[in-house]
Image 1 (tube, rainbow, N blue to C red):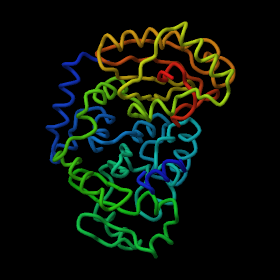
Image 2 (cartoon, one colour; image 1 turned 120 degrees about the vertical axis):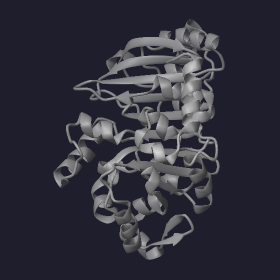
Image 3 (cartoon, rainbow, N blue to C red; image 1 turned 135 degrees about the vertical axis):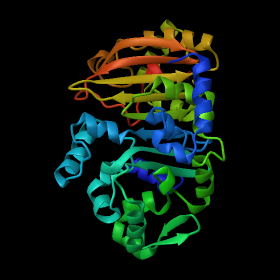
Image 4 (cartoon, rainbow, N blue to C red; image 1 turned 30 degrees about the horizontal axis):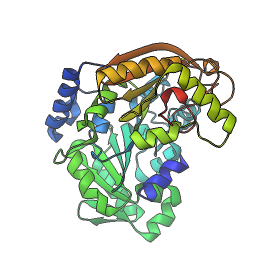
Length: 361
């Protein structure tokens, strides 16, 4: 969570024709149809992030509340349960809002308990958080609260002043210091710096291409549809986060030997992972998008072979926490699906060696 807040503060499987249809639907989405948006929440969330985004996180708060049996989480007890239970099950790791539910409810009049979905993205130009609020939230009240906290209107954005920063505290000030409120779209947008706001707002309004307009990302969105939480990373970021590393020569040698047995690893154009909560176990998918269907099929074979045996770079065996239950390729994507015991592993942080999801050394 701290890493996500720092990132915001310092700027930080279907056939191709179906993917094309998803992208076309994204381009045709307009504000007066937002309530009837037929796409999965993940697609809507990625469609709100600029095309230059290299790391994207997603949290389906509506699905999480339903899965935990919390309904609209309108009581203090329900909000506390949402914060605690979702965190324990690794459902809020990709969220900026999840650690501040009570504080936000008191200060802003809304929180993750009132959000349908949340996405955030990091790009060279800045970082952005987009949250779609439920219909129960009054946007007039949202704006009144901003004034009372200490925000000042600056064009389309609201900027938190020094006194307001002291009121909300360092964490919320870093995440929500510059906001835009879009009642017609039921969205609140936060950016790491005011100069990045026009880019994000133009993307939300479909005046600029979104992250979802990129073919590999659209394929990942299809493969990860239905996830309660998801993480998507461009090539360099995904390779770095899953690398086994060279600090331990013995581990590096084990990784090299395993890859030599399985076959050549290729670096994905974009990679992602998505978690679906269950009771008591979970389902997690690791998806990688490649340059061609042939490469995706070959990489599926290689990566499936690496999904068993010693957990190179970690302790024990992969099967101790991850039980492979499906391996498929479709279009340019390869997907490994695992049954996950949440008491024995958590993977949504996006950090730590994962040879079966990694890149060539």
